[in-house]
Image (tube, rainbow, N blue to C red; front, side, top):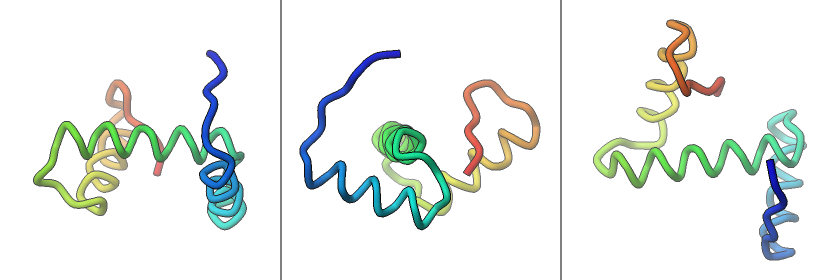
Length: 68
């Protein structure tokens, strides 16, 4: 665990999104980072496909799966 400095405007966006998605600001930032990493690693997949893949992995108890 560590501290990551981000732009104030991005922090505000994370705060707003976290309220809408009922997540903490940290959980929202972590969600965005993981989705971004997966999108870079799988450039042909859409956001919805990535979330579906992660949801299925979480239901199967797969390693590194995140709840969406």
